[in-house]
Length: 231
Ligand code: GDP
Image (cartoon, rainbow, N blue to C red; front, side):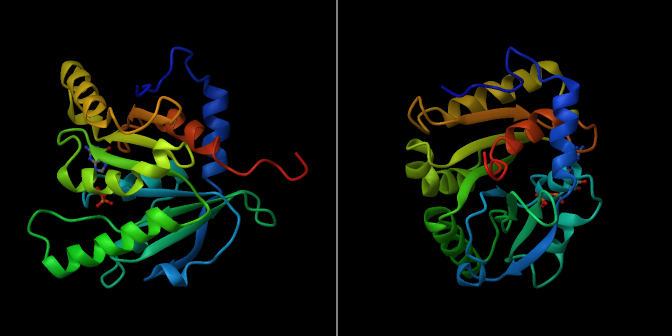
């Protein structure tokens, strides 16, 4: 069962704006070419993953209200890096966003693909503070074979509920209503069997350019941050 956002109880605009304001505090923390270089800590980490060109950078930039935050990952030589952003008050950050390397077109070089699989597999399987995954899926393509490989890596942790999953169907401004309906249905079908009923798999339409789904995505992501100190 994969509940779709928006839920039957629409998110009110204030709640959405508050969640976005929180995401707007995102700032660059560090970049790492391998897992061992990532800082180890307790802050819940929310990883953004997706096929190259799925709209991941645009989504991160739209959600954080910053034009170029995620484009560091597009710098030549940096495309295979994991970029971390800190979110929350400067003196008491309460979450990290991780921008993971985009994965390839079919023609991607074999060695690059193998390396990507190693980095992703180890990150997704062992990163201890990984709280949730935001998977960006181009609404015109649906779940691709590489997305399925990635979902395989995280299936055990998603199934047990220890890692949450939000699937954003991107670029929905390019679809009409019936195309959007069928994209949602077919993506939901692909995702079914991904987890136990307890597992939290959310699916939501998104457009960075037309600002569709920003509130829903921000509210879902904010729910994964660390509770305030002392709570
Ligand atoms: P990434 O490789 O996954 O980081 O993808 P990008 O964010 O760089 O986007 C890939 C391409 O899709 C770019 O040409 C973007 O301008 C375009 N794009 C991204 N988001 C949207 C969207 O919401 N609507 C439309 N129409 N195009 C988008």
